[in-house]
Amino acid sequence: MATENGKDEEVGVVKIISKTKVLPHKTVEKSECPLVTFDLPYVTFYYNQKVLLYRGGDFEEIVGKLKEGLGVVLEYFYPLSGRMGKDEEGVLKVEKCGEEDAGVEVVEAIAEGVFIDELTQDEAPPLLQKIVPFTGVMNLDGLYSPLLVVQFTKLRDGIAIGCAFNHAILDGNSTWHFMSSWAEICRGSEAPSLIPFHDRTQARNIRLKLDLPESTASHDDSAVATLQSLREKIFHFSENSMDKIKAKANASLTNGSRPLSTFQSLGTHLWHAITRARTHLKPEDYTVFTIFANCRKRVNPPMPESYFGNLIQAIFTVTATGLLLAHPPEFGAGLLQQAIGAHDAKVIEARSKEWESAPKLFNYKDAGINTVTVGSSPKFPVYDVDFGWGRPEMVRSGSNNKFDGMVYLYPGRNGGRSVDVEITLEPKTMENLENDKEFLMVSD
Image (cartoon, rainbow, N blue to C red):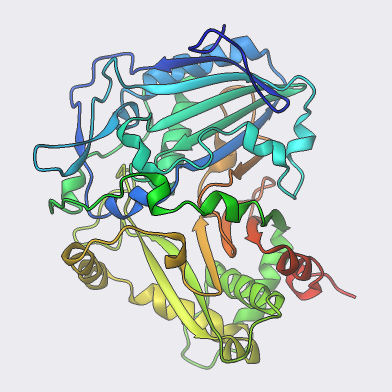
């Protein structure tokens, strides 16, 4: 089948053979939902891109099953089938959910000569961006583009499922809730085991009209060009390595100190290593560790984990480079522990009110100077996304929303306490990191 213009479309070694639209199979009762304070700042982020790689199977049969399951799961996750729009007062919302002129775009493609192993290399191959859609597309474009685009690419020995989610509609927690539910449907379930909670006004019910940029380029025309000069690579930390990192961070705690969590221990391990690798930094230069924290259980009243939307806030921890590197890991981990623990309902409320009083749309420079910024989570069940023919060989992100110091955490494929760390850095910094035995947990 050809694309909408009737011709196959070549993209490098990837040939796009069709573009179709999938709507919820049943009529959606609610055709719109509001975008609230927790969603709106991300209008000028880019579509979140995820890629899942699977071995084997008949491509046509698999795609048919995936599209059928997608139509069912959209009955429950209906905002993904809509478009962004504005009400009569110019306030952003999701509208047209399940309507004929909206829907999820599904792209089918073929990369006949490409094997899965070429895409599972630790260093992100350039081809990766050919199998995930909407590279360089800002969430603002959801005013006239699909809020979810899925690309199924036939590989020599399997299939790649590339997804682009509008980040103004959902966060990582909701992304993997959707993916897990879609897989459940494809395995034969009649409905998701965890039904999404859609009433965003329960988390925040403030109407805000934003001063939107005229276009993506007018807000940020440098992100894609900047990314082309960076390197992206996955580092694997086994259960044993994770245990050692945590034990080291907790080894010298003073009496009465709270034990440091696995995340805090890994966080300071990454913060130290990336800061060391940035050899151009002076001791007095500030460095920032940023976390996008799930606030579902932090707000008052707490929201269910099934809350569908964005319910995250950035937590910033700042210190001087020299101070961080002069201290053992419990210093940095303690700073993270303090910042994370202090981010309670009162702080979230104050931050929300502050933003509402002067709404500001995010840009790349807002991540902080000399930053290490962590997204995703090892708790997300990314390797449990089994559509009926086995677990994915690898899960990784596309290039959107990446900059020098961006880190995505995923559970290791082998399970347990293993963690995969996907890092984007300047080439020289990455080279230094690759040779850092302390970071890699390599003994002489």
